[in-house]
Image 1 (cartoon, rainbow, N blue to C red):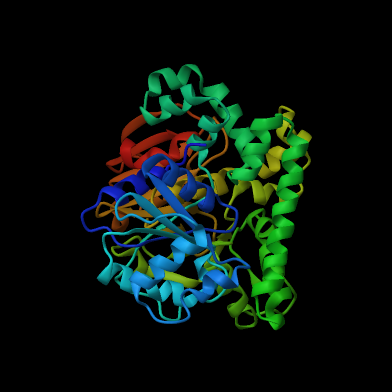
Image 2: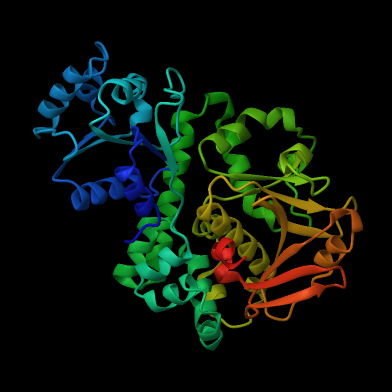
Length: 441
């Protein structure tokens, strides 16, 4: 599988200011595989040590932080020679060994010639002794749509999107849309994608997704404080249902009559810290910086992966395959919105993302982005023939001063100048290309 993060690892390896690298991501998103693959292809050898159920490895860091001693004992543990610049040291599941996390500070200060890469699943509490300012960090998300296309052997369409060849894309738009619909079902979790590649049998993919969901439930029971386990699971299970409402705002009262935010604060924060949900807050006004106008108590929650959303929703497989299926048509707006959010997150993890709605909730812009000192509204539609009343309402507000707007749908790419008579430059972007919007604009 070809992962976008691979290029980030190459830049890290060649950087003159390289520090120990910490790779974050939810469980089973492909961190371990990526580190091993990168080490095999870019170093003379790689030393792989995992702290998961490995007390011997943890004991290496129980004494002091003498990097020479640690290197020597890692060599013994892995039975591999560690050579500066030629060996990649991989420390996996590092969140389970807090002293190993602290040791990264000393690798940075005293042993910068060694290439150290670590991974953590975001589960548990490993903040104690965190080496602030002494490590590089990246987050790996589920495979995006382009990575999915490459994995299933449809590189030609991935290349068209990467090259922004919209003239040719328009010829194959229906085929690419069908592949996007397939991605809605399979999602971007590597195990699910691999199962589809191996068998091309979607019920097998469904089995993998159910297994992943059950593994996450087990993680809740293992890592969440006992008194909050039921709340965390109830929150997570409710995300698809709340997104399916006409008003997609997350309401605690929908979990249980009379519920309040204060009853679920800890549970929600755990989900967010673990990467198991994305929280998108409403802004009152689209001014810079957006964060200053965020309403923290008015928000929407999204899943980390569209395949997991489909699995929890338990939408029948035939709904994805049958043309004009009524059930799918009812759900496709939710899937399109989840897809767009996932693509935007994967293209830039630091991208500030919010949403806007008027006080009556009759007009809503799915995503408001802050990019290159501009505020860009992104309206998401799931079909070809679409109206943009919400975007028209938003753009027509004189005090919003909208210069650029994006409408993501199944229409072909085009630009409308002076859209809605407001001087706004409207980019109609195919939904399946929304992850490339930076380069498009």
